[in-house]
Image (cartoon, rainbow, N blue to C red; front, side, top):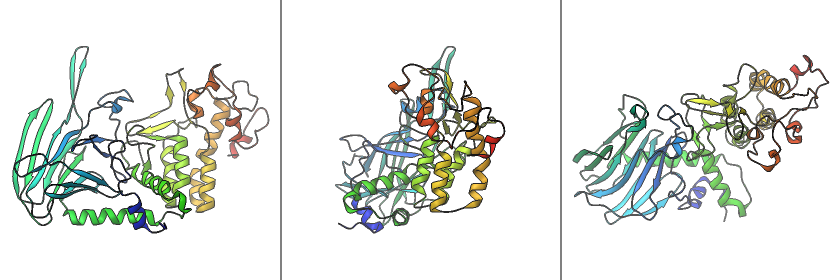
Length: 413
């Protein structure tokens, strides 16, 4: 089968995305839509650490969904069971009343399309507050804000407190092209325009066709895996917010929310084939948080950066210095001298940091001071402790300078 056209990539991935495990999202969005396994029910999480709610960097992994128990209902509020079909640009729900659809109207807005000339709606539980116990009492904080709306006449709009949140039932009158939107944002002004579902789904399909149209060809046996990989490369992009200064790829919106140093370099290698500016921004996003001594952080996320870790030992943590290599490969594909001039001094300072701060015996061989800085994390290679003058680390550099380093190193990357 020849899948050289964007439309064929979309068809190839039809029902290949299992949203009981992998969230339905879109380029730049922080909204993650899941289906409860074996149930006609959805839930929605946010791809955000929100360390202002809980300082634990991993707390978001266990945070309950922002919206849960989301079901489709008929005009009487009765649950509609559905069979689901997924694709990169949309999710379709087949019910006894007809076909519902779900797309991203924009990065903050989910759009549900209702069957033509059918009164129907949604029922869900939203938990916009976060509560935790403290030594002196408790804390209540805001998670995110929600607006729900429709372009149709409202048949029922009921809300009541429930289990620390609110239970909402929203049903609209029948019409040709009825839409219900869920808009989730940190903003206080939550107004948004409700776009007809037919327009939103057409825009979503065109957005993904455009993305796949830039993808280089691949041998036929690899088509399915290749198409899925390129879906992930777009689906895992997050828009700038807080310390994330550029549109950039997070390794997983589900469980690795943030930007990691050498991940970003490798992401740039892939993006250079479809969008060189997007590739350059993966590098810029990390260089934006270079420390005064030249170190680059291990990770950047909305509310902060990671430059040291307490486990299994306490030490500064970063990742291997492959950014210059990635920039060179990007330049070979899409030359841009202005970009090289922009990143040259930061990368010189980055490589110099390794030898000025990570070479205790001053023998010209850089060392790892934390096992995670290697990217191999808790590998048995580090069982004898730190620091380690590892061969892999030193192969990432140009030929080492003479003893004493001096200023001669400053001009080399």
